[in-house]
Image (cartoon, rainbow, N blue to C red):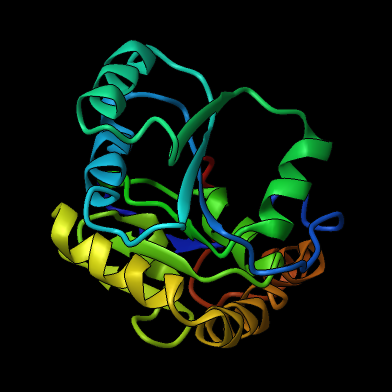
Length: 207
């Protein structure tokens, strides 16, 4: 952008030390501000084709909540898609621990702590091919699924997790191995490392 060569220095999310693994339960979790660019409408549309009894729990508040409520009602998903609003840290850790996986398919996200939070809780991430930041961590079939940004593709990926808790565990464990390498110690070490030919430029990103 401004003629400088910058290296992203990834830092861990705020809850990194508190997140934990748990049961691979009967719901997918979506954590996000309820805004159009986060594409929670896409997540809801996907659940039209996701087999029961898997549910979708959406945590967050925002300007499109009423639109999402209308969409849930229109598709008759009131018993399977739940908007739980803002949750505190304790509840967030519990929701992460008990989820089958995380559905996070925003449009061109920057960093997106949600991906790393999911991996630190040993949960696979289902995302989209145009989601931006999550693609720097999610490897299709390795620690989650990268799908076309259409409801049918997301539904197919979620459906695989719905019918195979063992798959969810294997992908989530792989994600943990990736996320555990991202530490503040690593950030400091990289910032302090000598760079020949000029000063180091670091790029910090936020959710």
